Length: 309
Image (tube, rainbow, N blue to C red; front, top):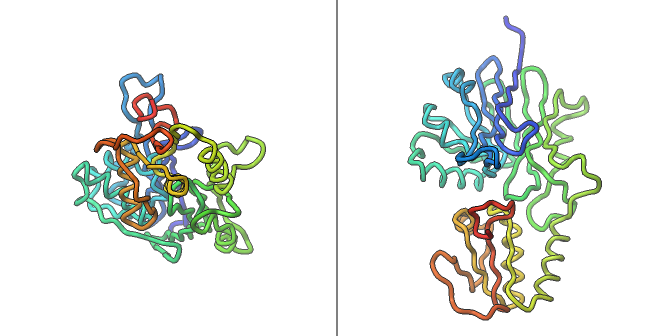
């Protein structure tokens, strides 16, 4: 009888922002955790996106039990269109919002019929071979993000996902630290895999309530147009802007394809309530005084082709 084992192979996402992708291999098969891309910098002249090196995936694709997604950011789901064509009826597990983004992406690439989308929630206990996945809600700049508690042949493993500790979140449950503690149990976890972006910076992150209070001061004082740039998947902050626009009598105008797509998906799933005065700049906008307008645009990271630029 072979010894119990677990091998975790990172294909990206270590020491870099993006390309988050890991292979978890045990005696019964392989699970891919996340499948992200990275956007190029000045050194990648002529390159549109960077994807993980999928050679390791091709070697084990006949043993692939499924793909588990922690959340719907591009650096965790964006490379799926490049690997799905090489897989056979892959099962993809994620939250409703994450899978809605995946569905839209794969439909655009005419790949939706090659996968099975399997929604999970905080109550789901999902066996994949001899690995058993538990989904633990975390607070992040996108709805329905999960950390993972995984029962493995060699002990319990905790994968934090991307998270923020917000003691008073505006929406959702926040990061459920008690659930992580409960999963690890009295003996603790064998291994912790944790997001570490900005971990060396002193202090703490602003809570979303503090961010909203800052936005409200801007809305109260502004005499002209207000321009807000944010991640197109930050649905909670988009909701804050919409609520403030309604309160201060401003019309919301959005610009950016990804922003429009994510707002449509979030509204359909009930994660976002749009104000009556709402327009997509792509479809034309009314002629309004500057002090009655708030523009929500892509380009928070200074992308040269974004709406903000």
